[in-house]
View 1 (cartoon, one colour):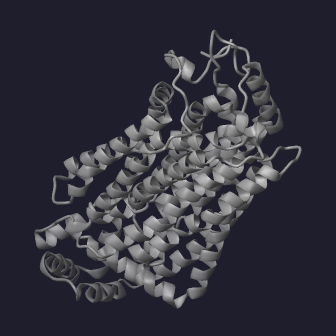
View 2 (cartoon, rainbow, N blue to C red; view 1 turned 90 degrees about the vertical axis):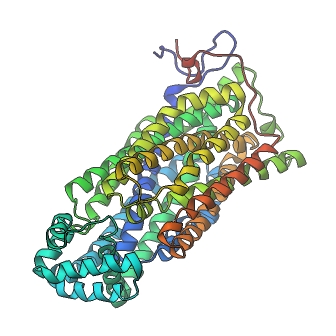
Length: 546
């Protein structure tokens, strides 16, 4: 498939991407996405079930990484621009950032394990105390919710408390309920979930020191991850000529998706081995994640020679007479039109992430609490979404090369909006199988739109950068995306906290409106695009060697 010769090959009339070199550089991003996939999936559950937080409360915590990133990503990107070492400008940050992130993550997991033990002690040792919480929680219910609560309490009263409680934990609650009351519906378990949260909230209040320790360790993890994210992403444009950066970013995104898929498999297996919702802490999940991140770091350090790869890029540009005008005039600021385009591109990034992450950051709890999906099914949605995104990368590279980045991004926005509209009307009154299939298809299609936008927006930003400040411009990109991700989980949580179950679809209305604004900002962007080239064979989008 790929030939013998390394580097860009002098074909008939075009440059080609060095597939192998880009793949090697992608190991760093692969490790980053391994972490974030697990973090986005499991952290809401930890904060809600172990620390007893509401949607809004854990939305604030989930926004912490994005708040920090607003300041840290440009800082570390600029810092790496100025660094000059034997390992290169970016590699030092990737090495030590990964090591520190793993170390702090394990410390955070230990604190969570201790907190979980205190919550479990109430659950396991005193089921009658749990019953008291059930009564407390149900006192404010009315209508159908009250009927569900009454059935819940009746079942508890009519059975041996320990047997009933064990049924709640091991999944046999449905059989117990039907046997004792002759009824069962999907909202029946809601009192149990909320009861568990109330118990966890009380434990949190009685052990504030553990919460403080958890937050400190969490902040340390987030700072360590931020320290090498911009350098890792900036390494791609460092080693890739500008005309090929959309294709290179597609491959880097593929590597990130592969990392995310690895993590999805990890927590899916974890859920299979510990199917009870409150049966184990997550310490071994984090230990496994840390080990995989270190393996990917070792792979990166073994094959990447940053200074050599950067020099290869310069040689290739010279061979093809591709002159980076921005680098030649590196002391000149951007002209007015390019500066406006930069702001519009960053605005597109901001609004896209405002819409997407409002939904993604609450996916786990929305799907399990509102739509009544099992945790394991949410894992399946994520697996399919990751796999679909990986499959989409090749057609996305083709679209970008044929139509240009701007038009391709506009297509992606339209696809995402159309995919999310049906989600407004999906609810747990529908047939469970149809609901699961419909919701999954919507997320698969929206994920395709996500890939289209993500693959092309970063290259549009770096297209306007100079060779000496790619890391800084990469930081600008992440300021836009992380600012959105700092704000939008809180807004999404507030929407969920302040709407009834039949109005939760407003979360998707909000997301769609934000994504629609991204279409407008991209529509008026004039710079940062790539010129469509001649029609190519499919294999040429990722390059070939002789």
